[in-house]
Length: 379
Image (cartoon, rainbow, N blue to C red):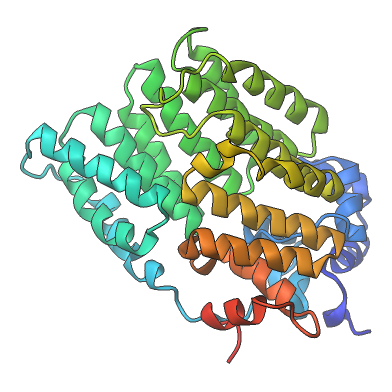
């Protein structure tokens, strides 16, 4: 087997040895645990997030392609949604105040943008966001913060983590001293930092914002911050803290009245259960993740979640099946995600990476060969 054919974890181990680093040394420089590095090198944990691969490559002083080898995703056809990202970038770069529109009109546009995002109509949202950002720039923070939050969330989906961080930072900067607006902005901060592979920073930011909320204030936002913190802790390899934070979030669920979610967090029983599964995936405990998944989607609360949330979760479940070497299970999850929200599968770089891994099976599991063709992974 040539070096280019080795699993990515083996290549990490080879370069670590060449740099005369122990597993503990590499773990310390990455802000991870030694057991996390060991699982990566043994292939127990799958490296399927490019920002994390870049971070490891930087510590090992190699080009990321040296770690990816033949496992690098093929150069894709550009998804339609990505074609308009430059328009969003230009809108974020404008600092002039546009003529003010009636607040009610702007509020309707913001609500429509939220619905568009939750239905995973990303190509449509890319087209409308530049105008929405222009319209809200001179408006009240109560509308500007959610506009930046929507923008940041979409950019995370499209693999534009640096730009997502900028939009999230703008949300925080315009939140003023209002603790609830600050907390909602911190949700986006946590998502963007995790997408950048900066899990410790995400953990600190989300916990700090959660601590500023009063005990009975914006419970859905509070619970969402704790779930974001739990995912960040899992990204750091801290299973104990991830479980503790998830349990704290579960304790808040009963305090959230049905339909009381003005900040579009999607927080509730189902969100907590899905987070438990994703935490297990992040920790490399794929067996536990798949076991929990078997019951999560049977509940009524699952069907009430937004299409974007369900499809994103199913892509993470596909990652769990990949960790177990179950290509058929991964394929089923991807095909189901595509049925729920096609853009979640066809526009996200993360989903494309998972599709590429599954499609390498010989023969490729049913349904995945079609997805690979649709996203430009085959010619």
